[in-house]
Image (tube, rainbow, N blue to C red; front, side, top):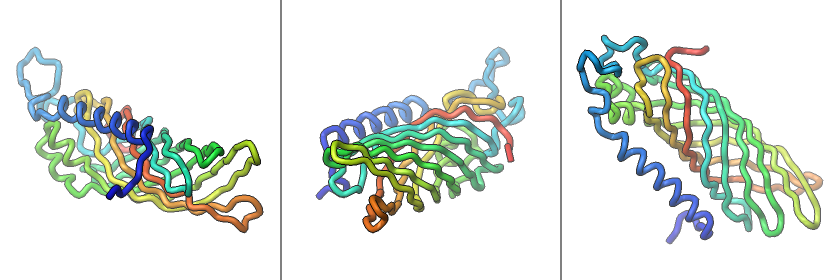
Length: 231
C-alpha cells in the first residue's frame, strides 16, 4: 500500500532528491572534518580559536527546491521552489523564516501555478548537542519541527478557461541543515533539507466551488549563513 501514489515522473524526482541528500550526508558526516589542530591549518578547530564562533544564532538567505506531490483531485506531481530569509536565536532555541515560493503541476489538461507567501516558526529539540561541535553534532542540533502559515495564489490555465483564486492555510514540516564550509568563521555555506505538508482550501469560478490545494513538498537547497541575530 502506497501512502502517496506517485507517477513515474514523481518517483524519479523523489529518487534524485533522496540520492543527492544521501551523498551529502555521507560526505559530510565524519566528526573530524574540522578537528585538525596544527598551527598552519587555516580552519578554526575550537570555539576558543574561532574568530566568530557559531552558537546557533544566525541569519541566512536560502534557495530551495524539489519534487511536489499534489493532493489536488486528478493532479499530477510537479515541482516546487522557494527563496527566503531565516533568523535563528542562540543555541537554536527557535528560528523563523519568511519566504516566497512557486509550485507547478497539472490537473487533467490544465496547468496549475501556485504562488506562495509563507511564514514559519521552528523549534530544535536537540539544540544542546551543538555544544560538542563536529559535523554530526551540527546535524543533530539542526533537526527541527516547523509550523507555518501562508497565503497561496493559484492560477489555472487550459484550453477551456482560465481561473485563479487566493487561499490561506497552515503547514507542518521537519528538516535539518549541514555546514558545507567552516561555520565558526562568521559566514558559511550550508545545505538545507525539509519536508513540508501544506493545507490550503481555495475557491474558483464564482466562489461556490472550492478545491483543496493540499500538497507534500520536498526541499533541498543552499543557504548563505551569517553568525549573529538579524532581528
